[in-house]
Image (cartoon, rainbow, N blue to C red):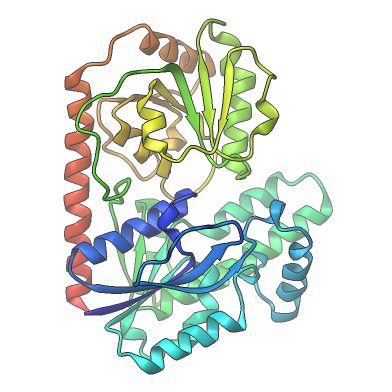
Length: 383
């Protein structure tokens, strides 16, 4: 069975949470025995050899803050074509040409559109009974939140327009595709509410299908935080941690922060060490006595929470960090008040890691993986 997987960024390097999720679907389809062709862009600074299954459209800037003058071009394209800005970033004649060429050359049993920002490709798929779309979150809800919290008229106009246009794309995909694969119950309820909605499946996403650690590794620091810090919800959570939790922590605790976009932390706090990008997120979190996940907003499932569980370390998290993960293992502690957040962090750093705690997390992940693979296999067979 041949499957065409259309995505934004070829996700194999898994630099962002959304790429971890996309690669997880690709790996699951491959492990189920299907032939998967993955189409997408690479970042301008990506350096890796493509697999035979990966088809590169082009290299391009992706993140707005690092894209030089391209955001202006994306905005102009967005206005001219009536696209959301977040979709204009990925729109290109080269992508359309690539998809047309593939569809003409091969017969695909299923075509998957990964992310609503690629909704403009939907019209190229003539047989909608073969079309599946993956909804990583409800995009328009995120932009509506940004609109409500914007502090100037221009930002409010941009976010309101984005919310309106991306909702149109989400809704059209959800009502023209045969199936929507959602990542949380919250998201599935929204799609079910649409008139003429496709079949909705909730996929219990694991943190990936790579080999897991089989035993705890040596702890090298007390508290670990990791994220893509330019992303607004992560940025907001880190600021909340520094302003409201950090003052309650002893100065002798070592705190390591990993991930791109928080260079401003360097030398700002005596016991906070900024590590920047780390090649192995799970290894970084496994080295922490406790992983802090102070997320206050956002949509979809929190990928780094799944990665943190896979590391075997204890996790202290806000309720939002557990969205889409209702049945988490005993290694996860959930708190709302910053002083309680700090108390739990301190408590964990003074206790010893146990094999039982590690095994509990590992068993939880194994069960989730098995269910995910079974769900994906069942969905494709039903096509």
